[in-house]
Length: 200
Image 1 (cartoon, helix red, strand yellow):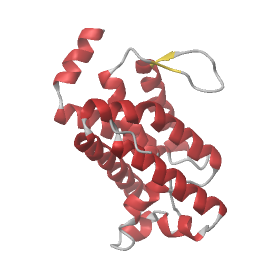
Image 2 (cartoon, rainbow, N blue to C red):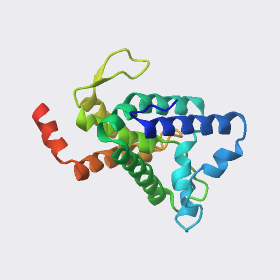
Image 3 (cartoon, rainbow, N blue to C red):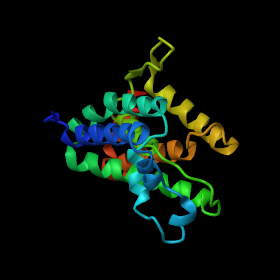
Image 4 (cartoon, rainbow, N blue to C red):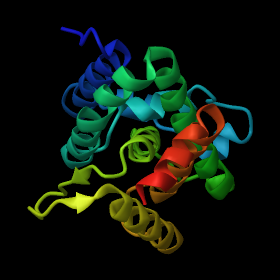
């Protein structure tokens, strides 16, 4: 059942989980078809994968982490922003994070990426601008972390990991998605940053 206050977030949540699970356990060709390959997109092919890649994941751990983060921030943010602005924010985060990957890997024909990390990072960082005093709990550490400290650490780690090709997670998407969320709020609601300064 869709959340009447956050129908877009509910739809994204349901579709992403469904397609990811089907791709992981029923039909792996879905993941192959939806994956974004920057080499081909940069050459005018498979352009739809800029969007489709954000609706599938490569393993349960990545799916759980992304959807856990989405669940705790996206629904409240859509209720606050409204469905139209939230939809634009999510699309901006998804597309711009893909553009970053395309720019970096456009000459690597073997590289492919999937996951909603970029769009979810945009949601997370937009949320932090509006509610910087909130605390996050990152499992398995049972200690609340202030949102603004988490944001600084998140960007620093993503920058380091992106430049060191740490693991298989697309840290470029994390980083670009984070800045997309911050930029979206700056363009659409600059007053939010003035309010943010008053908090500190």
